[in-house]
Amino acid sequence: MIAFPKRILAPVILAGAVVFVLTACAPPHHPGGSSSHHPGHSASATPTPTPAATRPAIGDLILSTSGLGPLHLGSPVPTTPAPLALMVWNPTACVSADLGISAGDPNAGAWHTTFPDADGPAGTREPFILTTVGSAQTGNVNLVWVWSDGPHTAAGIHVGSTLEQLHSAYPDFARTVTGGVSDVYVIDGPTGSLSFEVSRQSTDGGTDYWPADQVNKVLWMGAEVSDSPYIGPIAASDGGPSGCPSGA
Image (cartoon, rainbow, N blue to C red; front, side):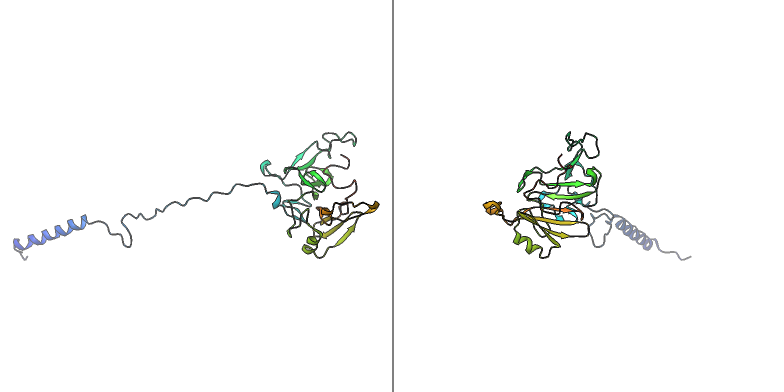
């Protein structure tokens, strides 16, 4: 065995001890980042709030050959929570002793819009109405009729638009139905028809029927199933659509 002198071995052992101590006390090395970084932890993202559902404004409702907004021809009135509903069901709206309609009868109720009454050529009334097959709550919608400004077509036509604007928006109509003081212009679609009744001046009896500022204007407009009886003039008559059976 080779014996190392004690004076040589001692410094070697001491040097190893010093290196060990310094290594153990050195702070940990974090390549490419701060020592405050903790892998696997990230700042939590702030959740985006979901916008609250709202009822469409009446000016946002689009009339087409398919219906009015979410009110579709050939489908029942959609079930919607009260604050968001466009229509509400009144089970006794059409009760009439004269017509023999009693509360609880299949045709005793009617749908009413949740929008306030509005002024139009037909007077102050609901801005629009609808009817269903059999006047039943769950019946399919067969007509939506717009009485006042607000709802409009995709081309921007609304109650009060001029005949010139109507022809500009829709150059070709499927047919025109002529009345005594108005004409009805009809567009046909796959699920129904879109009709516009436009005032036309009549001087029968020597007196103008319409005030000058109401001539050649859209009086009212509607979306109807193809076999609807209301695709025709109703101005200067007792006819016209109603949410209830005739006379109720």
